[in-house]
Length: 216
Image (cartoon, rainbow, N blue to C red; front, side):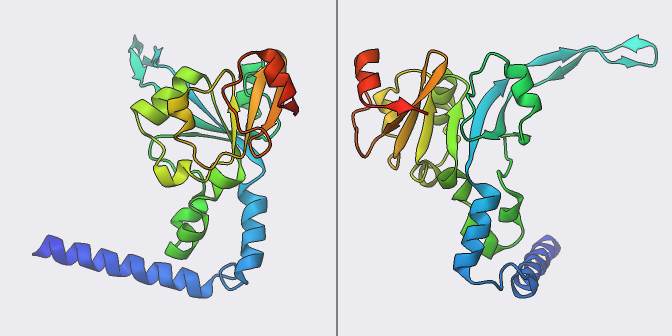
């Protein structure tokens, strides 16, 4: 009973804090249309790249002894410029210049969503909707989306722009119902395919790709 009472007290405290944030916040007192413009500037017009950091084995020195430390492999979000080629040859430098780099496991893409319920409801899908998305490889995308199911349906449905290094399998294409464009990797260049004009994703060869896309 004591644990239940403590839990209820914490919930009431959190609810009061969220309500206070909503009432006192200068941001939340602005008209919704103006808040949306601010959210778009803060959270949009970038590229969110998902990569996998492999298991690492380090040997830190502790008390004159060499101990072996294992860092588990994990997914990471990298926030890049929207037109950046995420598969550029100088990939290590690319991660160093990324605006944001965070572990994907259990992490919020935006800290705004944790401030109060209203901000959560208003911003939880904006990083998915307002940014282009890319993955380190098609294999990693399949693992992230299909095998591990790390992106919920309501998040996938609002993604409008997706970077692809190779042809997009049908089972993955079906997972992104709201796609409006695909940015294809074509040699050293990127090409933009407007799916509202050219809805066919399964292009047969490079000639067809060139006919239904333009340089990005």
